[in-house]
Image (tube, rainbow, N blue to C red; front, top):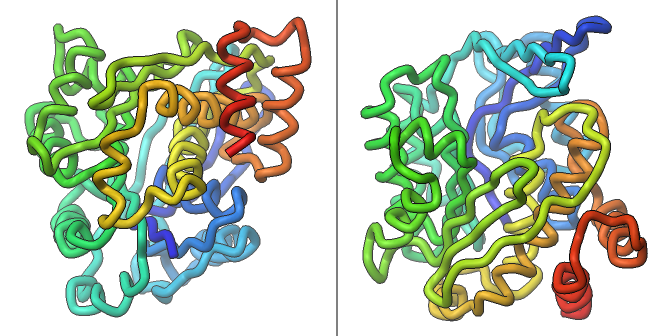
Length: 335
């Protein structure tokens, strides 16, 4: 069982062409992405007894994500996304984030979990952030942990505080993903890749096995004990960028699970992953993000859709990948 802890909310998307509402939230999107890629996953997060909460629950269940927590009496959180003419999104939020009683239920909720993912608002916003950190600490001895800060400066405005919070989770995480924009905000004046190199060293032998940085059109970059690598961004027509990083995260974790590297007992093997294997992870994750940006909203791909995207890129002379990238895809699909 895979577990995602974090916020679920409704994205009210304002485009030049009109307004639409979609279920979202970075951790929720990762849970849906993992489920669509064929993994059993549960989502631990709050949502209200209101129409928006009903839509959150329905959306998760439609992708076969398990919901062990019932709705509560607070309003469902709402994020308003404004999409510009280039498809880029900016956000404002109306949030309620607290998880009372979570600590007492963790032994039951996390029983059988081999991978725990969290990040974004859930790890930064009080009072719920403390409960999420406690959950990660509880899970760490037996579970692979992944973390994506997915920073929201419009919510957490203090970069010093956010940096401290992020580092608490980084030292407990096996797999860390951040965007270059996240790292530029958390570490002003520092090259994002240098910040990622520093994160890899946090926690020593108990810290991250890998740190991955998404860089938009430049393609993702990653570092682990074996070295550094990158993968070129697939060329697609962009509808919008909503949920692209979450689809990337879900696909990255999916490959880790497919390779049998989830669970604390496999930490040694995860740390020994070659740079070439890390590039294969980046390849699949980059194509998952490409599927998502090619259509409106946070709409992660199924495994079949992802396989078609990869195969089409490998077969087409017009794909925006090089021959080495095609080899990376072929090697991954053969595993």
